[in-house]
Length: 119
Image 1 (tube, helix red, strand yellow):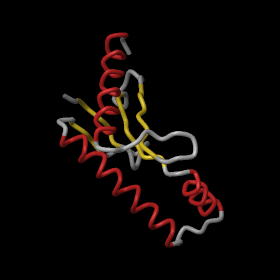
Image 2: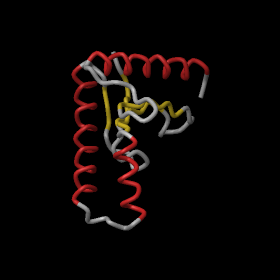
Image 3: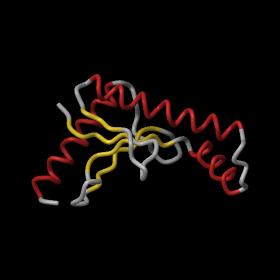
């Protein structure tokens, strides 16, 4: 990826962070939940800016434990999946409302939001 493209991507990521903060969302830090902005600087079709939600460590630990123990029919896992899907929609809607073009379909980031362009 060229230096100019990378600079533009970083600018887009900064605008995304600013807009999500303006809606009251907080960046994830340490054990706390919140949104995460990732830059994929790959020079391919998957490159770009992505937003995802990080659950608090207490929730993500429980989900991981249940998956390891093959408790895949757990109501808690179903609820966690519903939450992840709903927060993905809320993040995408928030960014769309502020003029960003977003996409939701990505096998590598199932509950992520790809930010294609923005104000």
